[in-house]
Amino acid sequence: MQNLINILDFLPEELEDKIQPMFRVKQIYQWIYQKYADNFLEMSSLPKNLREELNKSYYFDALKCIFKEKSKDGSIKYLFELKDGLRIESVLLPMKKEKFDEKGKRIAHAKFTICVSSQVGCKSGCSFCLTAKGGLKRNLSAGEIVAQILYIKKDNQIPYERRINIVYMGMGEPLDNLKNVAKAVKILSCNDGLAISPRRQTISTSGLAKQIKELGEMNLGVLLAISLHAVNDELRTELMPINKAYNIATIMEAVRKFPIDQRKRVMFEYLLIDGINDKIEHAKELVKLLNGIKAKVNLILFNPHEGSLYQRPKLENAIKFQDLLSQKGVTCTIRESKGLDISAACGQLKERIKTS
Ligand code: SAH
Ligand code: SF4
Image (cartoon, rainbow, N blue to C red; front, side, top):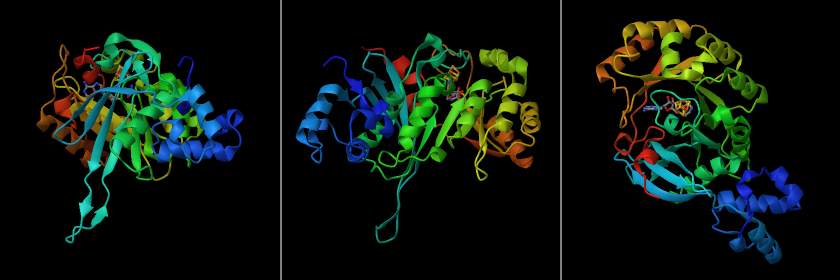
């Protein structure tokens, strides 16, 4: 059983070098990502000896679910164990319910977003974030990122062709693991696989300007989200030490150069923390900062955790903040606090389940 390789780590063209010809690779991809096979031996359209060889060299059960919790709003949080025993979290977020007409015929499918982790832990050290607490343990491989989506789709019997959105907003800083995240984007978008277009994948970053530039140069077609959280460098550095390396001006310059689909916008996440950054002056400064950028703002209400330094903002302040942005023409939503009852902000489930 030792030295098996995670087959989810490979793009079709990479597998072609190992398993010829290409049509066999396509079949394997389809079995794994579209027919949701459990093992190689059941891949009945492959010759028996190939199935046995694959079984001796590869695996694709990269994750073991050790805890799963459903929130009242329908979101499902997963705690996964990797092959080396480290743990990560992912969340399934139902965005829209399925719709039926008066005769009971389905007229619209349910819509889902899956939030994935990109690292075990994180080295960015943001003061409000639980993932920051233990520092960075290691990067996830591309296949370990892909495995989260595969597991969750399979577990919820979401047919492979159903469109879903991916957000890299779980544990870790995706741009600190750019190579593997970029590869995961490509594997996820393969037509013989899960076929999730890069335009349905959003990479969220604490603002690593150098890597934003690199990601832009890759021209993958992914969407970008910036975790801004503060409008001046002094406060931002207090909340997010990474701001010392890349200040607000540097991040905005990288964002302005980032290639983005004409119809799309860069998302700015703004975590509202009671009494810290939720005043109307902050909203006004935010409007100025976003001037000239095709932006949309997503206000997040701080989700307190044990030992956290901060408080949840008052809803009325969040609404005033949103109103000001909207009046000034900035598209702005308040992120529904999905899964609040199940500790849905990143790192919070792992911290709570300390069993081994
Ligand atoms: N490292 C990346 C992506 C993972 S964090 C980033 O920082 O963008 C995903 C989002 O969760 C970030 O916007 C982060 O600020 C937010 N977050 C972290 N801790 C939170 C908390 N306690 N309550 C609400 N949101 C939180
Ligand atoms: Fe890392 Fe993002 Fe948490 Fe900051 S908010 S510590 S960048 S995961």
